[in-house]
Amino acid sequence: MKIIKTFNKKEIKIYDDLIPYDVRLKLYRFINDSFFRVNGNDEILVENQMEQHIFSTYSKTDLDNTNFLKIPEIKHILKEVENYEIQQTRINLSTLSDKNHFHVDNTAGWDVKTLIYYPNMRWIIDWGGYTLFANENLSEIEYCASYKPGRIILFDGSIPHCIAPPTNFAPCFRYSFIIQFKKNKNGNFI
Image (tube, rainbow, N blue to C red; front, side, top):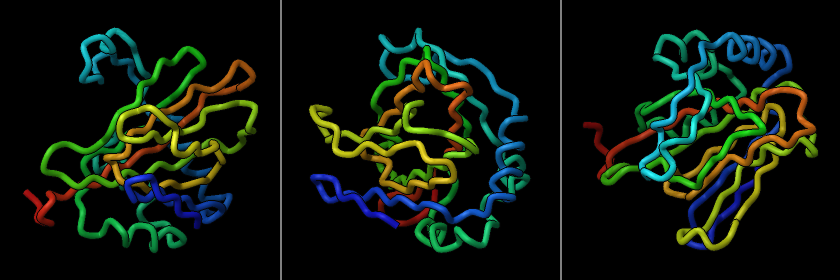
């Protein structure tokens, strides 16, 4: 595990090589068979609402069917969110033409932890698709996480972050499997 602390002491935790290959392959196949849709209204800012993104929203049943939360090798990661409830599970399908913006995942009154899993079975650095983490006023990149197959990133959802699209060298889509966990700031569920 690698821990990155942002300037204001928020944490980004990176875990590599935890999930066995056969389990990763089953997850990849499940994700690849997902029902994807295009939506241009995922943004709060009006000037960004015309841009479209390809994604798949997972229900609780879909998430259960992935068996992701039952993988023994990641139980220690899930302990960090055991007092949280799942806010959202989704798959982002990124392409060369994507236009992504920095955003945060938390909303007023909520403490949000975001887990990103990189499900692609093969990916090299020349293909891009990094996850960028910025400072609070979006003037500097604080950390750039390379897309590494099987990598899991757990971070404070109030850290501004953005997906960099894959480069024109990438022969396939870039998937990211995201689970957002939330609890209200006093620790109670609503």
